Image 1 (cartoon, rainbow, N blue to C red):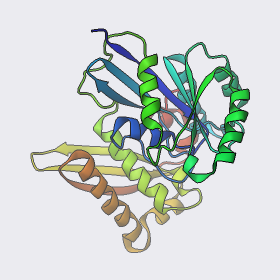
Image 2: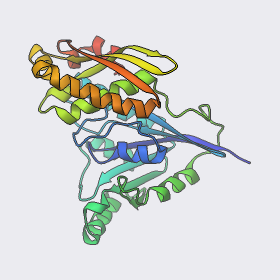
Image 3: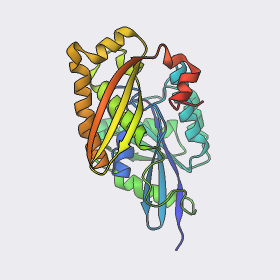
Image 4: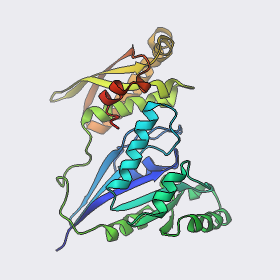
Length: 293
């Protein structure tokens, strides 16, 4: 029996549902999801294994015009998604009319690989709006095969999944068949803590934060974690901690709950806020946090 394997890369504007779609495909919560733009900063692989296939899904940051070094690094992850894709998933939101970067749109329309254009969040509109959207995108991306889906409601997702399997090239598996992702445990600790900060803090705070897990000790009954919440200024550190430590404690309680579900065992997490001035514009710091250009 022949075996198929390949890289399936998901791209699109911020907040169109890329992470929700990947999590629906993988059946695990690998990518964090919030209502804020720029939630995904890295390129995250999720691996789906079947008896005769291995689908390596890649969630990428939302496409935007970079304003500082961190965002430039984020866009380099999107560019790399074009380089190794066997199948490209271009995700748009119902009612959306353009991509935030025309260069990326040209790359999609000139792609030599199969492109699936997925109109997401169809549960938020009606048939007339969907028909208009499909007509618009068919004209903009004539080389794409189109699907209407709701990643959140899991509508149409299985049809897309089956189509991807058909399009995968014949190949042996790239990763062990029991592997779920290419990221280490500490990465998911960082992402879950960052998700809670995105949910509970406003204005520039979530975008000025980076998490670094300094300690991760797994014992038989419990995992002991110490994570640093990096901010750019002293005033931001005060906001992260909150009055008598209430704000940072809430982040810790909610992160611990999710981490216990993720790892399937008890977790103790200690969070510490520290200032790391202008880390978003510092090449050395960005490299340290895994934003290699």
